[in-house]
Amino acid sequence: MSDNGQRPRRARDLGIVVGTLPTGRHNALTDVPGVRVGHTTIVDAPRLHTGVTAIVPDALDPDRRSLPCGLFVGNGFGKLVGATQVAELGAIETPILLTATLSAFRAADALVTHVLARPGHEETRTLNPVVGETNDGRLSDIRARPVAESHVLAALDGATSGPPDEGCVGAGTGTMALGFKGGVGTSSRLVEGWTVGALVQSNFSGTLTVCGVPIPADAAGEPATSAGEPDGNSCMIVVATDAPLDARQLGRVARRAVFAMARVGSDFAGGSGDYALAFSTPGAPPSGTTSDLPARRVDDRDLDPVFAATMDAVEEALLNSLLTATTTVGHRGTALAVPHDLVLRRLRAAGVLPQPSAGTPAS
Image 1 (spheres, rainbow, N blue to C red):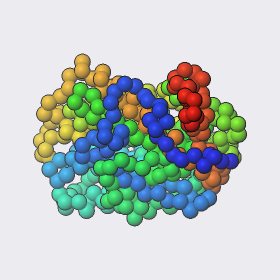
Image 2: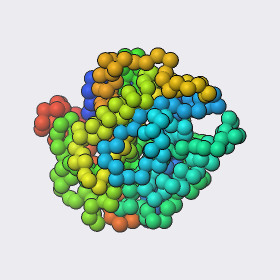
Image 3: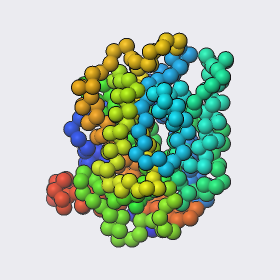
Image 4: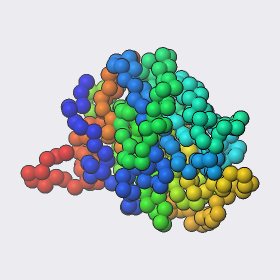
C-alpha cells in the first residue's frame, strides 16, 4: 500500500478553498493572539504511532487563573478529562492536551505537575486539567500507554506561536479518519475584527467529502485501511477566539464546530466521541473577581459571522488533517493517505475546481 510518494499538502496548496472569509497569517489556531501549540510525537514503527498535542493560552497567568470556555458533546463515547467542571463553570484553568485514549490519564497528571510548578500556583489546592483523546489503537499499541510526563512537558514547553505541524504529528500520529489516515489539522478565519482558529484531532468514520463531493475510500483502487475497522471513531476539536464571548456563547460556538464534521462526511457513529471546546482569550476577569463575563460582550444577534467562521475553519482543519497525513504501517493494520490526485480529479469532474490548462501538471 502506497501514497505514491506524494508530499503532504494543505487544502489551499491544492487549490481547495473553504468559504469566502480570509484566513489569518498562518491559517492556524496560533493566529489567535496569545495561543501557542506544541507537539510530542512518539514513533517506534510499526508498534507505536502516538503522541501529545498541547494548546497553550498565554492569557492563563498569575493574574488570570481561568478563561471562559464552552463545551459541546456531539456524542459522549470518550474520555474528556475535566469535562464536568468545564460544563458547570464555563471555564478552563489549564492548557488543553490531546492524546490517545489510554494515555489521557497520565497526560492529565503531567499537566497538573506542569501547572502547579508555574508562578502563582504555590498555594493551589484544586485544579481541573483538561485532556481530550481519540483511540489510535489500530496503528499504535495503545495498551502500552507510552505517553510519559516527559512527553507532556516537552509538548507544553515547546509550544510556539508559529504555524503548527499537521498530519501525523502529536496526538494525530496514529489516528484514522473517513477511511484514510487522519491526524492533526488546523485553520483560522478573520471576521469582524476578530480571529477564530480551530485545531482538530481527526479519528472518525464516514465518507470523505470535499466541498460537497464524496470521495469514498474504495475509490482509491485499493483498501485504504487493513485489519478491519479502527477501534476508535472520534474527533476532538478545539476552537479559540479573541472575540469577547462569554461561556454560554462559546458553548454555541462549540456546537457549530461539531456541526462542521458533517461537511466532511462524518456519519456520527454511536461509538464515536465527538467533542468541541471553544475558549476566548480576552474574556476572563482578573483573579479574585466574581464575574465570568468579559468587560464587553458580543451581542447574541451579532454571533452569526463567528458561527460561519467557526464552521469554515473547522471544515478546513479537518481536511488539512487528512491531506497532510502520510500512509502509516501500524501495530494492527495500515492506513493509506488520501491520494491528492484522486481528490483533484473528483473535484474537477464535479466542476468544483477548473480543469488544468494544457501543459499544467494535473496535481
